[in-house]
Length: 162
Figure 1 (cartoon, one colour):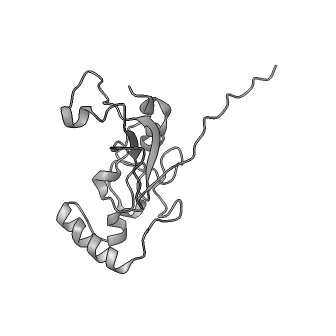
Figure 2: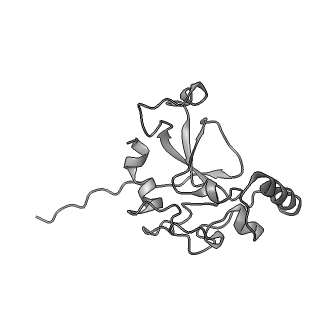
């Protein structure tokens, strides 16, 4: 198990049941700032996405991120907002295969240990790209208008009353 999975980011996004999206296993475009939410229609393939992007890009000011927690109803069982959609978030984890004995071929193997992980998908992503389990490998210098970060800290253990 990778450090990323041990940390709790994935637990906060998926909950104890391992949900596909923070709110559950059924896709709902009204619960995440995604391409489908903005388009008001299903976007499930590249050609449909390209048509939407051309329309959106011509009409909107970029970036088109939303206020935290908008749209409502996408919170995880832990109450964390925007674990899916709005901006893809940097994690501190180095990209590694879930199964360390698996090789993925030269194309992917060179990414392991160098690239960092982005999670959650951004406002331009469609449903498959914002699943809680989806992860993207990116170089530390990677930047665009759909990428951000989440500030989080581990809580100090509670002091026992003696």
